Image (cartoon, rainbow, N blue to C red):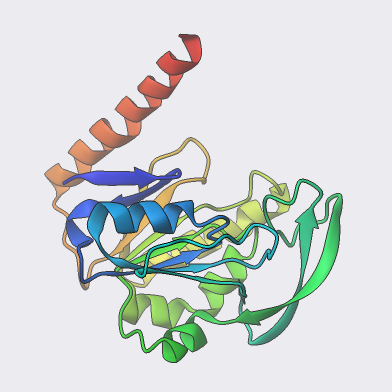
Amino acid sequence: MKVGNIKQHSYLEKYINKNSVVLDLGSNKGEFSEEIVKKHGCKAYGIEANPNVIKNIENDKVQIHNIAISNKNGEISINIPKNGDASTTFHEKSDSVEVNCITIERFMEKKDIETVDLLKIDIEGEEIKVIKSSIDTLTSRVKQISVEYHDFMDESLKKDVKKVDKMITQNGFERMKFSTNNGDILYWNKEYIEVGKVEYAMAIIIYKYLRGMKRIIERWI
């Protein structure tokens, strides 16, 4: 079982191919979408709330949408940090702007997407609301979820992260944690993907601990 990693987001490579659909929530400049399409030939939808970081990608299999994913359709207030590199709902030194927002369900409906092979989530604090509000859709229509939780930026989120993590695993997903914090967690839907105990153990050893050792060594070099 090979575990791929793009921009600190892990996923099971075996289940991504040229017919796959990837939703990249919090696509920033589109690097994750661009790289996964280049590697697997799949179709990727990049969704980014911050208009300042959107760039054109010359690949007809990558669509970038300047809109926020949220737990509602309409508008949401986001903070754009002074460096302009991200968007967040956290209170920090930033400019607050109103942007259009959409739910995962509505986006999938508009794009006529039946199932999502990989859902990558890096939306600067909104992941809790989005996962809670879309759990039925995730359970029935999403095969893998690669998420970066942002409780490292806000300690008050830790309890909510634990609750959401439990909610996901109680709704048919297995999980694998690849980071010391909650910055790289992979869930796979047991309805679509079966991972044996030996495969699971080997993946933890090879892709979590050996990667961690490699990062430590690189820091010392």
